[in-house]
Image (cartoon, rainbow, N blue to C red; front, side, top):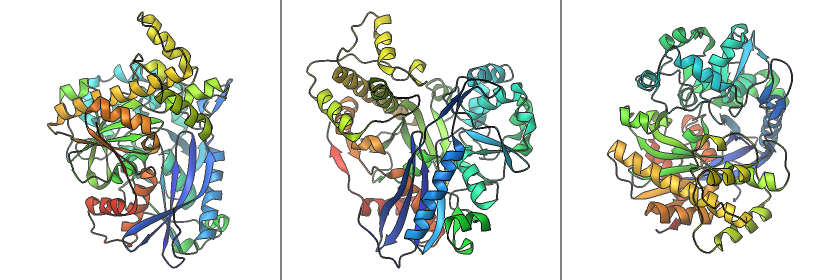
Amino acid sequence: MRGASAQAPALAAVDLGATSGRVVLGRLEEGRLTMEQVARFPNTPVRFTEGRGEGLHWNIQALYGAVEEGLGRAAAAAPGLCSIGIDSWAVDYGLLRGGRMLGVPYHYRDGRSARGVELVHAVTDGAELYARNGLQHLDFTTLFQLAAERESGFLGLADRLLLLPDLVAYWLTGRARAEATNASTTGLLSVADRSWDTGLMARLGFDPGLFADLVRPGERIGPLTPEAAGRLGTDRDGVQVTAVGSHDTASAVAAVPFEDPDAAYISSGTWSLVGLELDRPVLTARAREANFTNEGGVDGRVRFLRNVSGLWLLSESIRTWRGGTEGAGGADGAALEDLLAAAAAVEGQVPVFDAADPRFVPPGDMPARIRGWFEERGVRPPGSRAEVVRSILESLAAAYARTIDTAEELSGRKAGTVHVVGGGSQNALLCRLTARRTGRRVVAGPVEATAIGNLLVQARAAGLVDPDAALEDLRAIVRASFPVTVYEP
């Protein structure tokens, strides 16, 4: 990406993903956004095998240290740094008491939340939950994790709960806030008015006082603490931490370069988030049965979508073939490029599996699980690695097509175009298969949608674009700044 003038005010996006994180500098010049990645670092979970903390956890201390190091590089590279925004995956949290963290945050792929589902459903059923929070059922949603936490007795020790991007912001500013788009994924935010559902909290035995005051994307959280400013080597009074769409999908959808508001989107990464952007939630029984969610978006929009397994299936398969460690995810570019080329050359039909099967959620030997899925049904599984990769991508494309068709039926909208943003937009084979399976035009890009959405919300808050600019105006900047690739069905 091209550089930007030293005079333009700079913004820093902290973008934390399930396998890696990065810090990206952005500047607006002549109506275009320029970006520079100043730091990238791995995000590798840790597994404890003894004691009450047994299970899969995030290495949040190492992650935060890498965030501060990256922000230090950003401050050194951009003396005009004026704002920092933080986004990450959803649902996971840290517990604090007296401002100090208790234990290590659990990873959403840890199996403890299955017990939490039982505990919550003993108090309220799925239909009532959907009417209250509008969320699809996922075993690892925050309220299920908290039910398991409460049964263990650990929740009672805490006086504050912060979702992970809010926790990072707290350590930078000393101010505990809960950003609304991420809060909407907890199951504890009212879908009717986007406020904390204290009645549901009380029924489930959660102290409403644990949950911080809500802020919306674009609101200021606060300046850096003197200590954080010192570690970053910057002026604390000149740098504000700004709330963005802190659920990474909220930021990614904010950067989808829609020209047709009825178009569908796929935010494609470790997970694939497939759906439509709406002005109001869809809370029908049919939407609940189809497991569609109504999560909060930037500027009060609704992300009406369904989680579909994503490139996790591919990265875990490659990790298994390479003999990698648990949760390491990903592959070097050359190895992935060779596999995709071989998969594209596979002739004839490959079998397709249900990418939404829960067996594919935990870390582990993904090729063996895929093989087992077919063998249970008397179907010959894919043989070579190229066939496995092709089967994964065909299965994802088929799942995308089913999900978009269902979203249209439930919402009454008709999507003629599918926008693919995020890392999966670089996968030309997946994009071609998606166009073929959906029968729709696929517009791929931008790759860096999450960081772009993060930066543009900050830019509006900082007055670098019209503070009254609508989301459509921010998307016009995306279209002017980043190329896309079109795949016809």
